[in-house]
Image 1 (cartoon, one colour):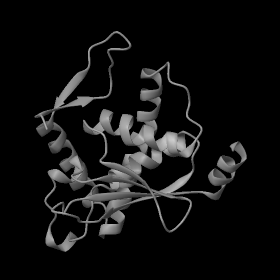
Image 2: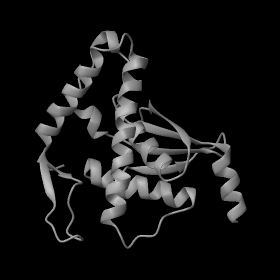
Image 3: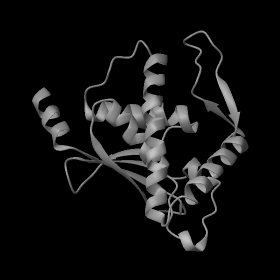
Length: 189
């Protein structure tokens, strides 16, 4: 990956030049965000909850910005189409590349997963031993939830480490849609 990443604030489609931010500046700011949050919580679950909450706010705004930027794009009303938008367009705008996979859950009809083998969020965070199972990709889970809820797909989202084939930071974002979303989807068919 390059040493610079895109900032999703501008677009060539709207007649302005894309802006990039230094990867080290991003890493520093996110590290400070984690440290700030860590000082205000008492355990790992609360810290991940705060990161998820902050990510949700980013996700809501990212959807607004990307919808404005991609003005010719119609609003997606299907689960898979919306998840595909998140997995590619949103991920690329915020993290510089698309997520590695989008999968349907096998245990329930309302479960989907976005897989990121090496989350940018976790790359620059060294987790102390007392916070052993902290997954800062809870921020990413918040982004996903923010986008989906703002797009009219209420759901619960969580981030989980699922190491595989040399990717010890591999993270699965698990999405569980509310029953109302599944009912709406069935009515459209």
